[in-house]
Image (spheres, rainbow, N blue to C red):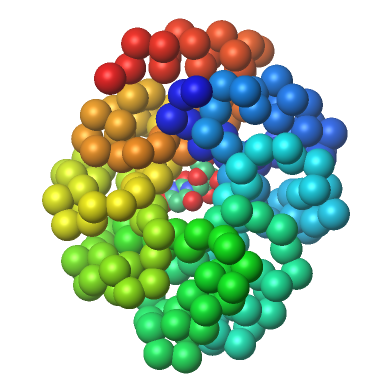
Length: 206
Ligand code: BMP
């Protein structure tokens, strides 16, 4: 199994049929699938049809009560939340709910787009400290390997890393910098041969 979390972001005009076809093709080869708002809006009941690990990419950023209310309505193995809302009456409550539901919680400690440097990246170390209190894993960018390496230095558990392919980072680059899983969306899901893509890039990646 390749250390890849496939990001199921449907192109315009496509939806669950497109996503479930990809799941069927790739589920035995990848670690799991990341599902975000575009698919959830089109029918959360379809989450049941993904017979693999599901990471709910909700980027939750709200008071605890509301975040709990959202995830109690969805099925998934893990959920992604923003760190900047803080612990008290926010992430502490989300953590309670994820633990109760046997879900993992991943916190965003840095992002792959350039704007991450404007605010988020000023607080990476503080976000990691917070992750020690609540998280099973963190999200850190493949597009800025210096940041990813810093996160690896301070965070011993899972790192999932977006930015591969369409955002410019080469496949395997985040794994080599210490990530546990690479998040791959468009480069893989819009390829004419997704399985071939995986095999050509990830078969000899170490
Ligand atoms: P792609 O490989 O097509 O660029 O998709 C990346 C996926 O990861 C998208 O779903 C995006 O919302 C998500 N993502 C990201 O690109 N950067 C981050 O910092 C965090 C993300 O979750």
